[in-house]
Image (tube, rainbow, N blue to C red; front, side, top):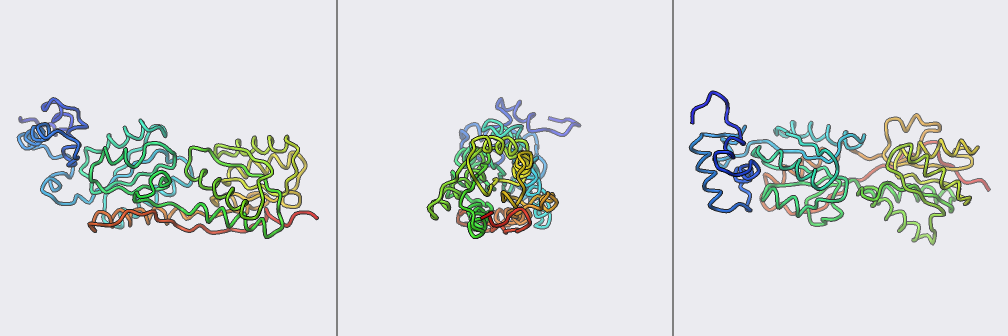
Length: 339
């Protein structure tokens, strides 16, 4: 077949009478392809002299120095910082990075995002999936023996290669700070229940308070936004319960909670102490500046590339969950409760 236009994966698929996903799986040596189909596709690849991007070296058994990042969301501040760090670290390690972003956090959208990138012959893949659904087992059915490292998504797959900032430790640092100040009546605004970080912080809150014989005196749920923190705080105040401190599961919800407290004539921290989580750049400029947990998003991105490269270049690397410690940042939004 002679054509001045560069052949595409879809051209091969049409000639072979299969889907382009099947061709990508053959190129990536995916195990779940019928042998007859595999041989037909490989024969056409050879006959048509088709080489997808850097796959000429790959088909000869060499690395392409190309890795993929598949993400369910990059619009949150923390996730955006992780993506920037991954891109920089990949370049520093000598790898090109291709990216595919899911249209929404659903399992079908994540599957489509992975499928759309499999025509590249990849050395490895990072999955940035902070929302539940589409398990590691599901991923591996699609990518075969391709090395994969998950970021912020290990709780349903304990044996998967994964990295996450230690949410339990960060939660403990905040609650111990409040307890050491003398707070015993603490209201909590949790994050959305389909997010790994939110679930981890909620589980940690319950366990740490139980250790001290306490329970949250009131609780609410937000969607990470300042508006949801404001609404949750209004609802808590409306319950008429007495509390001296608020643990908000992220800085943005803490900002909304602080607005609601002020509207009810409460001062921070004189009447109510407030803590957040993340250490957004703006958190130091809240009024008052927010006591919070700093998540090292840059280190999370860098370490995810280091782990993936280790999996690619060192056969037999054992899958494990790797945790990155967060840091406690004390500012002016917390104080001892009024006596």
